[in-house]
Length: 409
Image (tube, rainbow, N blue to C red; front, side, top):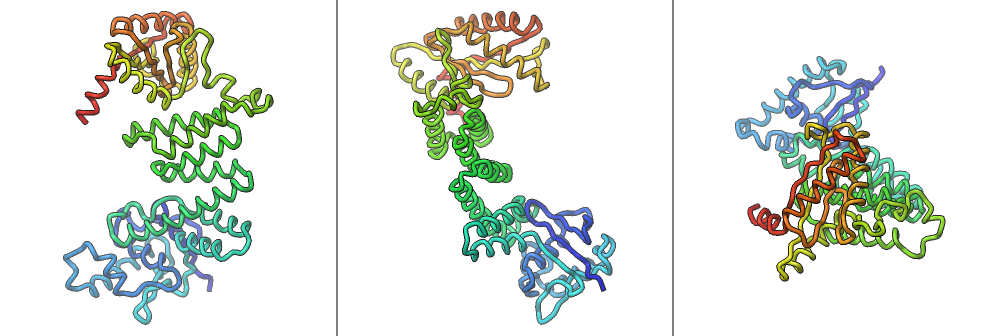
């Protein structure tokens, strides 16, 4: 008799396949049916003791503490009916023997977290580095996120999730070092990119930036660095960490090193060909981290002499003053604004790209009236370069304003 094949997905979210077809166990994804399936199959071939299964599933349900045995038996009975209705032949999934719940002998069952752990163990036991990398890569490809994130408030699930996350970090660390030592920087970048998509709050982006630096793809490295810094500042309210600052300094050293060959300087990815450059007689174009540091240093020093430093936040808009949502149009308008800034501002000023539709300009020794005048000049020049319907919104921010905002948070 042909066995029923079940594949249980737990990493990044719950799912279950029966004979290659996705099925659903009712509408409530946080139901005890899901906990039951996940707990039994996540234990692998050894199964799980009935007492442990009861304690985990009903740990938060005080109403059934006095009669756990009946509650568990009823759950198993109801589950079989739900499983059969969902498409599992006969609803036969578990058996209970010698005090342990495990997969029914008529079911060929596998859970992704068990498969993931198996490849980790194979990697650890492999004698050759290439075999280790092969198994770590297979484990890495299986991991899609935290273990049952929809049920993370349950202790056994959060604990399991933490253990699996530690194994995933082991994967990332090994593969990154392996690909770096093999000078396979593209594969190294892919590892860090996938990891940062799963968890953008863990600084995996730094590793991806380092990969692009080693590939001498400085444009991509700087673009990702700016994106990372903005995300941490705006979404998490976190200043650049020591690791990020180290990454930025190494990127600067590599991108502007005098040891670069002429071939590197002619490469389209070289920053010396236009990403960060100082136009002769014009303002200094830099990256956001440089702008932020310069702003705070200048503002503190000039304040002692009664001088001011202002930030002018410029936002491109359509003729009605609304956000430009079309990507290609926005990018063309931003290029025109960059040209307008270079043609209009002084060589003592600085600017950087702040977002998809914004530039940030640093103006020294000016007042509010001069800032407004700068905006009008930029708007006029932008209309010449991009057309009369081009609109430029602005906001003036001083160091005192920012300090006050921070004090109120």
